[in-house]
Image (tube, rainbow, N blue to C red; front, top):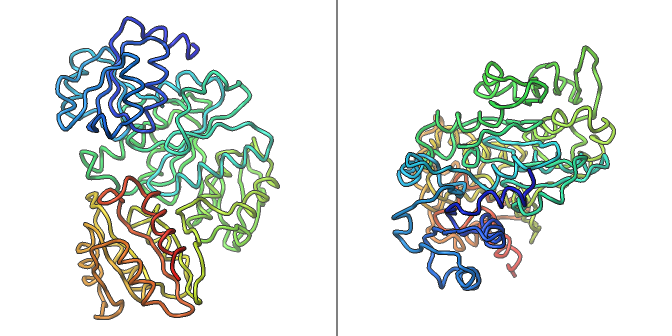
Length: 461
């Protein structure tokens, strides 16, 4: 089925779109262009939506806006925004009334004519997705990058050719109601995350599993042998399981030898790919990200091309991104670190103790594991946001903690926090933004938080 045929099948049916944010706007445009009866539900106001509201309301799109925007939610087909999970009462009631609940990404995966490689996980999925795309491009493939990264792809699906490749980052929110069957599915790891949105941890795990449960037998599933929850997924897979590990040899898969060389083991044959020390982006978590990507594209990308990409890939913005060195102080933006595990991995990249800025929105994840890492790797800790007190409690409750090791400062305003951390730094120090929390207490997303950090640092005199 083509996109044109799919849109034609919606004519004469009532279509609802929950959310008028950037991810759904191309979809709303497609529906309006196809003459589909469309109602948009969003908590924004007409003034906040601005020209978008003016344009599409004039074209006949209906809008239910404001705080009570979900009252009367109805439709034959309902497109949900990713963070609006299917068990929400309003959506559940509509589904029980006969509505088909779907999403822009689910329809894209149904219509996409080329092989699909899909990546999920609690940490590392954006870097892994980006590296997979760069590996395929370096091998001469045209790549369409999307999902939870890049931009919505549905509007472009008719431009995609069978010989291309689609590389998608998929969040637990996107996967929650999807029956997807990617040609290659990747789970980087699974650890508690987004527990303020999901019913519980098991609901989060079950959402992640949906990336592979409907795969065909000849498809590939890449799993982390070193993560117990991820490794257990192999027992439920219909597809062919590949592994990656930094702790032990695996086959088929990619692993880190004790001598620091990354190797692949396939069909009883061992292939050396590269020394891990040659990877340009720092940190053992990035070694894992590279091995994950290598396992995903093995057989599609030559080993020498893998090594070349890994030696030149400089990383993704907001992921241990070096902003500047001022008066001997290095400023690093790791705003993507929205969980304790991610911050712990970032801290492990530094040989000297850093000045850490942390805190943000509470998503129901415990901070117990963060305390020992902070005590081991941080000389001064600047806390801000809704999780500041929880992180402080975790650090002070760590066995062996002594007052002043690290020094802890609680500051409400984000800008004031960054400036105070900079003022406390001495030549040779590193100031690291790695919040261990989401950004939604003050920002639209982690990018906006990282962009503000970058702006503050770049404007320092």
